[in-house]
Image (cartoon, rainbow, N blue to C red; front, top):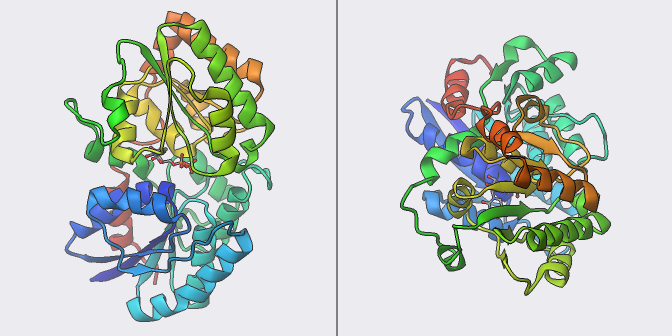
Length: 370
Ligand code: UDP
């Protein structure tokens, strides 16, 4: 029996680890436990509840206005006791958060092998995204098994002299989650969504990245307002990420406007079912860029760079940057050019086929990581 401890702390990590935890629970060869750092307390709890996952360990590190230094040191202080108690054969971390890096470092200090899920994403720009680019590079240095979502991420790891034998191309686990969430006759948990006018074309917007705070966030809001005003058959829905830097411009520029709904962040079941009924996605989220092609949902990326070039190559994503005009122009084009829209919507999802969790568990069971 292999004892595997998954450690994560934020909503996006949770959504990508949930299908893996569910898969591990189905395997008799594995004893799976979960430790949350709760770097984002409320969003994390909202994520786990619908899937019946209760953490075995909870560091509960979040404080108001927490700094990166505080997150890192609290994880480093809290984890040794958990590792001592759980005695895992291997820990699993996901992606690029500060929890990911700090948990990998704690496991290294305890000489416990680390499996990195969603390994090998890169922009090669130290400060974009910040701090995620360095979190994932540092995690690469500490990990023993690398679960690369795509060939591109595998090649990034090979360039950094990671042994080919330690890399497994699995697809992204975020795609695995869709089969647990999406239903035709779905009734939303967020009541306002049940009353949406789905005869209109739904433009779904999310924005939360650190580097989009300030002027870029205002540009995004203004571009969204113009789009909705100039296209009467559209309706904008924005699940607004908590945090002043997002809430304030969202309310100031888009609050109380016609055909615009600002909601609380959605749980992932609502999110996926809303994506399946939407026409266009505008987002700076990494996870949503991967999931949207599985809903035939063309996606405009509100960033200057993306570490998901597979989506650009496959034609599922357009990189718009964060200037008001470029966002407006790219979105307008897809609202008016039917051929361009259809081509994007029909493109195949390059990020995964829904089988990533099974491949990861197979690799751990067969792998020689001790
Ligand atoms: N998500 C969600 N509700 C929201 C926004 C995002 O359920 O209101 C989900 C989304 O489907 C994806 C994950 O959260 O699975 C992505 O998280 P987020 O956009 O917060 O972060 P990123 O992927 O950029 O790290």
